Image 1 (tube, rainbow, N blue to C red):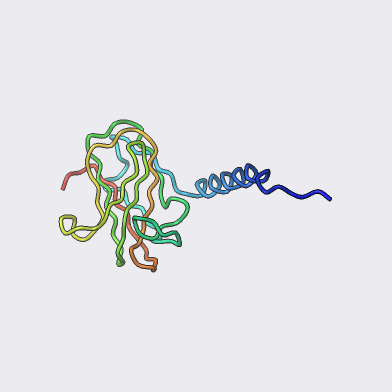
Image 2 (tube, helix red, strand yellow):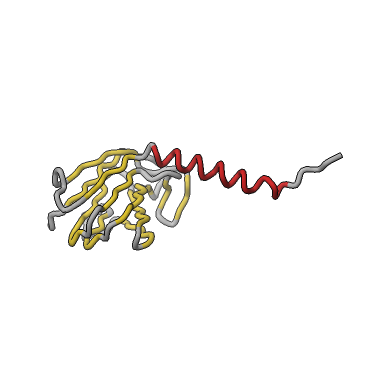
Length: 143
């Protein structure tokens, strides 16, 4: 009688995990951003929060938005607005950053400054267990 060795199945499980992750990324809205932003601010909407607990609140497995910065941008600002307690988790070429709301940004997670070219995965998290509709504003205008 043959016994199955579980470690032979790890590569298959890993491969399937990558396939499903790639498939979920394919459903995520991806936007290209350059110096000539089509409308300023560019407004995107979605649902905050998720079932995965992270150091940046509760998020989804797949990013809410993907932005691809096609050229160096001297200034770009991302701001999240929602009725809950939103967070903004950005995973990009410069690393992974968690942005929380503060009094300077009016209680909204906001990140601004220089952006290098590359793909940025945006996760709109929630500090509570709830989910809320959010508005993500992308602007090249300084306040």
